[in-house]
Length: 204
Image (cartoon, rainbow, N blue to C red; front, side):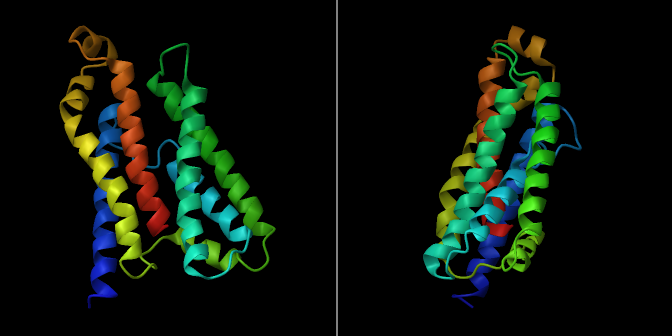
């Protein structure tokens, strides 16, 4: 109960909270109720990072198993950084550019992931199981590892709830109301990406 079921339940709850919070932030940011946490390539980048880590064939030790979520986390953050740079126009980041860049980079990361899996011999089953998602990790270590990222990301998103409401009026009117639109958008993307990357890294 306390060594297997309870930590796994808490991990699933934290994952759900992270995805729900970041999804709501993206929906407010893009003013689209269909936006999800994976819109700008977080999941594809995490999958690519995880498959790269598995292709190195680390041993099934505690350190080796920890390398997969760490690589997934780094891959997700790196993918969003590339999307952010591609979408930039001078000092602004148009929402349309961000979505288009996210779709393009996500497709490219997915293609690389498929290529690595097709050329892999022993780790393809492990990679497929990880990409399907689930609470396969047991013990309190994953819960302790994910807690700081989820609390930091969700805490930042909660403090920016008013800014997200103001952004619903559009960038120009939000700027006229005194909201620093570009800085606010960067902070929202960073916090939402942090929580999504943590959730994907530990839950596939």
